[in-house]
Length: 168
Image (cartoon, helix red, strand yellow):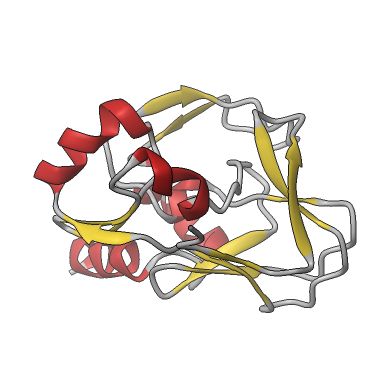
C-alpha cells in the first residue's frame, strides 16, 4: 500500500550514503515536487509504541503530531527514501511536500538535511560525504542559525513556527 507519493522522475535504489536512497531518473526543475510523505497522523505516545518495530519512519508535523506508518505492512509504502545530506538538493514545503531546492540532474541522489524536519533527541554519525559535512547530525540541528539561514523556507512549517517563536 503506497501511503507516500514519489515522483515518476525518481526511483529507489542502493545508496552510497546508507541503505536505499532516492535518485533522480529524469531532471527536476527548482521547486518541482519530488515526494509527498504520507501515512497516518498520530501522537507521541503512539510513536513510542510503534517505533521499536518500525524504526524511524515518521516525520514530526506538530508538537505532539507525527505522520508515518502504524504497521509493518505500511512501512515500505510510507517511506520516501530521502537520505540525509549536509548539502541537500531537496527541501520541505509546508509539512510533508519535498521539492527540488535547485535544478537537479538525472542520476543525482535526492537528499534532504534532517535539520529541515527533525526536532528530537537523536544523534547519528553522518556519512553524507559532502564537503561541508557536520560529521554528527542531531535532532536539534534545526536550532543552528547558519542552517536556518541556509535553508530559509525549505524547512517544515512546524520548525519554521518554532524558530519564529524562539526569535520572539
